Image 1 (tube, helix red, strand yellow):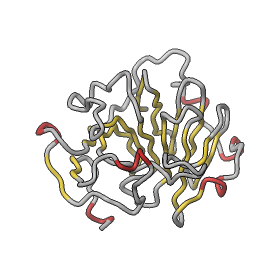
Image 2: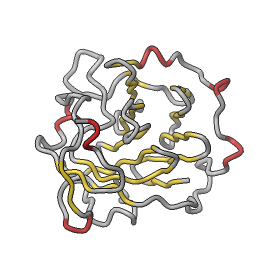
Image 3: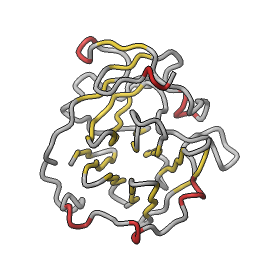
Length: 204
């Protein structure tokens, strides 16, 4: 079923955003598609090649982390084979390094205060949450209706998200690196990536 996921299309899945409540199975993958401008489902919008001005958020590529910058052991975040998941200390940002090439590394928001202009129909309702990912050498925004990047609960509660990646820590899995900061989460793969937070998101 993983092969059914097609990049740059809208994904329609039954089950809503149950993953954000810790009830999803990371093995779920999209099975049908429809154009992004027809509403509903999960959109994958074309990526912008240049990030908008984002003072103080680290848009400068000179500060991209290298493998030597990892501050945690990625194995502590591993779930379901070669998939790895973490969440921000606030619990609002949930991220995953997903083995399926079409998903790659991505993060989604439980609550977005700002919606990217690339996702005009993504309204932060339970079935239309803001996300971003890097896969196949390109970064994109998504509007998701389930937890593609949400790990299982690890703290005895029902809330999914995986283990917390503390502010200032960087986890590196394969060729992808994500850093958690008080401003948000920044992920990159070979110089392509995204920054995501409730009040700001951009691609680079």
